[in-house]
Structures are given as structure tokens and as C-alpha cells.
View 1 (cartoon, helix red, strand yellow):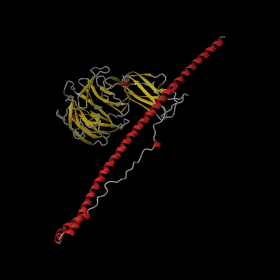
View 2 (cartoon, rainbow, N blue to C red):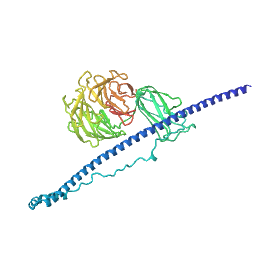
View 3 (cartoon, helix red, strand yellow):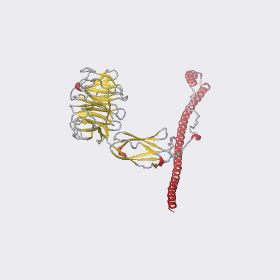
Length: 531
């Protein structure tokens, strides 16, 4: 009896499972009816749009034909009128000649003979006007009805509830690119290996804290989603395939503050670097480092291996006195902030040759007192120089002609600015005396600032260089607490260097071609690669 009851309960449970399956069948049936109705409506809409476009093309073709008709008729009328006029002149000449011969005296004929002959000769030599327009007009169709297509219908046998997403367990960090792999599967649990059969949607909340969300289909039929979370905190990711949510969607992830760690350094051999300051990377990954104490520029390849040294101590063309910053003009040429020569020099990194220079010591237009930073505007049209002792930013043409200056007046005037980068039509400047970062528009008008004095997280003390990477992360070097910290463009702290890193004096920072950055350490005479 007990066994029968137990078995009966199993039957009851099985029946409940059947009910769930039946409900799933019915739900799918309703969704199918809805999707078919929607698809039919889309077919009708596509047809109407195509018909509308065809009618528009019909009107345009007929209008063009009518313009051709009017233009050619006008030419034919004009040409015909010229011939008719010429014909009348011929009639008049013929009639005059006959009258002269038949009705005039011999003396009158002799008197008029020359003029009449000349007139007749002119008329005979006159060329008959050519036909000004052809009657040939033909419409050649480029549209073949048999090749017309409204579109195609997508069918998918993907089991959305059985489909999976990979990458949710990765270490998400603010400002770092993340990837997810969405894997549509069949009802048998197999990975689908056909393309263009599924539609994947991804929504990440909070949406305003996400950058560069891109979804793409791979050759194997899976989908890759890439994104960057701007700030630390919880996020929710909702995934849909063909309009249906994946099982357990939305997914919760926790984005942590970024921790930057040293993963390598440049191949600096035997005291080669005496005091590295400014640093720049070109589009091929080649690295240029300004050696402040060595009065030269050192060039390294994309692997960090030393290539060549450029410059020597002096004030002649190509010579340097405490070069403090460097930036690439193109893959072959650099600009150097030649601090104690109070000028900007342009040098070729391949040959080491001097190209040109501009600037001299002073406070007037185009002059400077200890230029400490140089960069190029986002559009590549202007050179931007940080004039340290004059507490201003100067903007020059690429030929070194002064255009305008800013930062040296008004309530937000700069106090010994040390570094400037141009990003998305903005000037981002480290204001050393005021312990903050100030942002100006492309005309040099103050927009906003962030930061205040201190040695804690997000606080600023003895600011040095800064840069902005491809994910809009702002990296700042601090002399006060020997750290590199990461911020959003708006000034929210999103990461910092690991506590295990013991910098001597981080001076400058710049992004590499991937998610890595390179940092010069002035006191330890090293250039570190961080990620």
C-alpha cells in the first residue's frame, strides 16, 4: 500500500512536469503566432517602403525626361528659326537679283553689280546650321524585377533557456576592457555553428557608466560582447537571444577599483637613464623617453629594447639642456620641451637629425620660461606648450607661430602648471600649486576642475604628469605619495597602483597601444610597464 502511494506521488509529479512542458509549448505557440504576425507586418512595411521608393524614382525619371524634352525642343526651335531666317534672306536675294536684271537699266545694273555679287557670294558660303539636338531618347532600366528582394526570413532553433554566457566570473575592473561570450545552443545542448540565425541583445545597467559596448557575431555562431565599466560598483547585465532572456538573466557582476601592477620595464642598461621624465609612444609602439639629467632622448622599440640615443648637452640646434617632455608629431618625428634652452625642438627619431625649433626665454607672445610639457591638439593642427614660470598654456601653429594663450588670468588661473594633454577638444592640465586638475575647452575657456590637496585616495599632492587612454581613463602621477591613480574624465577615482609598488618619484605616464601604461620613475631611473 505504501509503495503504491509512493508510486502514485511519482505519477503526480510527472503529471506536474507534463503541465509545465504543455505550458511551455503553449507559450511558444503564442510567441510564434505573435512573431509571425509581426513578420507579416514587416513584410508589408518593407513592400510599402519599396513601392514608395519606386514611385519616387519614377517621378524623378519622368521629371528628368521632361527636362530633356523641353531643353531639346528649345534648341530645335532656335535652330529652325535660324534656318527660316536664312531662307528668307535667300528669297530676298533671289528676288532682288531678278528685279535688278529685268527692271533696271544697264547703268543701274553696273552700279549694283558688285554689291549684289558680294551679297550672293556671302549667302552661298554661309554654312547651314547643324541639327542642334537628336531625337534619340531611350530609358534603360537597371532594375530587374526577377532580382528584386524584400529581405529574408530568419528561423532559429536556438534553445534560449539552454544557451550560456561565458566570462561572468572574470575579474572586472573599472576602466578596463571586458569581454563576454554568448553561446546560443540547440535543445540538445550543442553549440550552434551557423551564422546569421540569431539576434543577441545586451543591456548593462547603469548604462551611463558603461563605454564602448559592442556586440559582434563570430564565425562559429557565438557572439562576443565587449564593454568598459567606467567606475567601480555593482552592474546588471541583461542578455536576450531572439527577444528572449537567457536563464538567470539579468546577471549581477561587481566591478572593482582597478589595481595597477608592474609587469615589466624598459631595457635600460648600465645606468643609461640618468633622470627619465617625459615619455611618448607612437602608432607603431616605439617609445621615446626624455632624459632630464642625461640631456638626451632615448628611443626604445615596441618590446622595450633600446634602439638609439638622440641629442647631447648644449644650446645649438639638436642639442638639449634638461629635456623634460616629449611627444610624437608622427611616427618619425618628435617635439621636445627643451627646458633650460626655453624652446621646443623638432627632431627625427630615425636619424636623430634636427628639423626645426621655436621659442626663446621671456614672457611675451611665443616666449617661455622653462617649458615643461608639450603635446599636439586632437586634430593635429596645433602645438600646446606648458609655460611653467609664466603659469600659462600657449598654443602654436605647427610652424611655431603663437595663436593664443590661456590659464594666466581669471579666478581659475593656473599656479605653475606642469603637464597638459589634449583629448576630445579639451585641454586637461595639472595645476601643481593648486593641487588639482583643470579642464579647458578648445578656446582655453575654463570648464571644471577636480581634486584637492592630500595624500589619501583621490587627493592630490605634488602633481606631475598625466595622460588619457583610449577608454577615457585619466592617469595622474603623484610625487607626494609616489603613486599613479586612475580617474574618469569627470574626476571620479577608479583605480591606483598596487601597494606593493615602491616608486621613487613617478614623473610621467602615457598609454601604450593596448591596456598597458608606461611610467617614468625619475629617482629610480627606470621606466615601468603597468597593467
